[in-house]
Length: 338
Image (cartoon, rainbow, N blue to C red; front, side, top):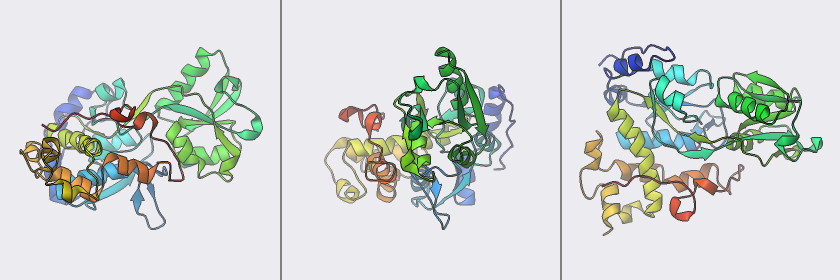
């Protein structure tokens, strides 16, 4: 089926959704033999290429998991690096099949752009990073500061709200590309670098002297980050949504890439349904009944992905915190497979 180009008009959600409904993304993906995944232009731990161009990260793992669900092969995915400004246009136009790029779920994005968020794969919040030599220990000491950030993001709006609410003047220094922001901050063109806290820890690794910089304690916003698809294609939306849910449920049920073969013979009804030993839950979303088995076998559960990419034993060293399972004191929770 030929995919139509969607109108890229802010506020034309109904037109976008109606056009998208004429396209069957799963059929298109199967016909070309891979999923085209939109990612960042390089954010360590989330979506970042190595010297050979191989992509890795928490957001990359989600796209690999979708490929595992659809093709039973997590390598059947190609990556398109996108700036914050480009990301929604690329998805709306059909250039990519799914966007998995540290993107905040907001009401306007969910209702005005013809897009659907498949869930939250990382609960975040916006923070600030400064040079330790400034002697600043709180964001409330940043009156008159120049602030580097990305254009076309919620970050700019949050900065404006925070400084206005605290009656502090400031100067914004914005760039389209993340590496431009990092370079500007590293060169001293601004006093402060602000983005999602996870991004601060990731981008700090790119600075000339990472140890000279500190992330301030204040978190000034809610930034639920998650993968995005076009509205109007419920089948593809369901695959994206349940790919994430499968990874979270697998962790909760103790199903890992190491024990998934053994767990296929589990007597636990929840495990049997997840791994396709009982019911036809994969067929219900257009994939094989061993879709979740393939996700866990080839990519891992959510906890495995978190630990491998951003966890305490990685250069980012991020604790699970609110991203722990609900049963472990966090907020991570997925609907059951039943």
